[in-house]
Length: 512
Image 1 (spheres, one colour):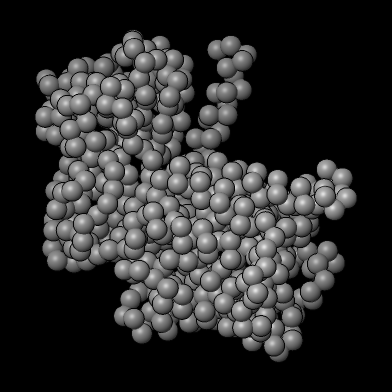
Image 2: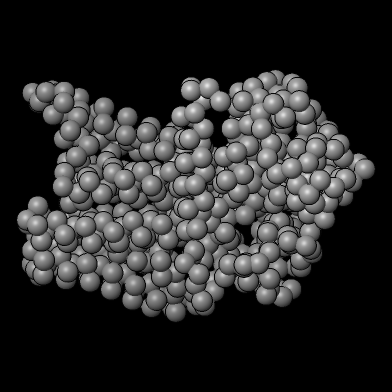
């Protein structure tokens, strides 16, 4: 290994370990933990004299926000005969804690209480087909501001908070893969705010510092703009949305009782995302399952209405379970059925140890229903059918490719699929792969002989750059797609780069 390659290799291994660690938590659980840490940090800062709210005021404010969002959520869930999502309600409460000023003033407390109830109610009243349209905390804060009872101050935008806010935001954005979206928003918003401050006579350094440290840009982009349920489904749509929201966030305006505010900017973005996305959740009726391999199972559902998606995209399922395993209720699964099918299917690894959500799936009986809350993802093939592709799957990483192959992708383009599995019994969807028309390469870890319809790609668990180049000599002319566990993806991406792959797309399976 050359000295130049060593830092890159170290960085890839570090990223793989971080992906594996963060994969133990769903996005919702991670955001909840980070916000809780920030709330505890704010109390510490106040005790040290870096914040001046007063400990009693902050504790009462925190208890009010968490208590009212939690209780109102449970009450409304009972009224609408749905299961309450406690994590979501606590996240909303913590967001409102950082939006409104901690105080004992009766009018201000009434405003905070109203914001908490309105935020929770927006999940049910401002919803379409069971899915809320607007960020609940932003909706509650905006409507409360219109009443005059209280106005959101976004006090989280305090220089003292940056020591924990910055790493917390980076952690969330890395886990949600929204770093580029955040960068687009920050560039647009910071440029506009800094230009305004420069025009007011500030120096460039001071203008940039005030924009990032004394405006709620970082808190806004880390915990609110990138909220999964209110995002557009495609990456390019999310980037365009970030630019639009950045402009609405930063440009000053005042139209009577409607004035510039972060919460209004977010609501505008939420509405735009709703208009271009899968509008609302849907119900999926379980129709049956079948074993794919000794360690994987396919689950089939009939949707309550047609589902719009592209091959390679995922669906998020809400799988309530009484005994939480720390990963939350929602799970993301790649769709294996072709668009337009009467059923939607998911291939899931079901080997022990099983998560609580997987136990829910395995316990389903025909006729049982689960909720699907989102469709999205950009693990899609190039639009040009002449563009050749290399699909690399590690184990259950085969699932996002099934929708591509079921849609006839290998009939229209040059497709090579390289599958890494433990042994022949662990090759999922063998019949579908044989009928796909793609060139199938299989590399088995135990050294046994793969099925006759595939090409033997050698044996052993590790695949390095030279070995990959030998298997696919024209890899430089192909768009490369890699799917599997975070550790497998990190290793295979490194191999693809060393083999000459220039356009590498990845899909890590974490948070199961």
